[in-house]
Length: 73
Image 1 (spheres, rainbow, N blue to C red):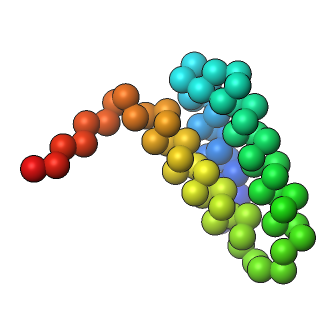
Image 2: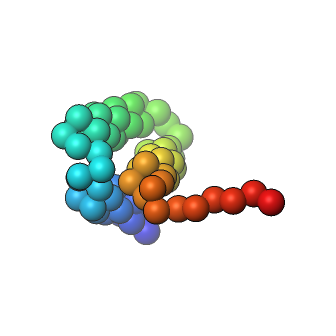
């Protein structure tokens, strides 16, 4: 169950490689590594998984924002 956000992160990087570009991919991986190393020093469980899920949501909005129509009536 804790592996799902990690797999989704790398799938999103692969799917959105044209939208993100090399700079976006490098920044995302650096943020991911920072979360990984930063959460290893904390004693709170599931910090990395929840932060990675939030990063996945941000990547979803960046990659698929052109395909979503949000209308408020």
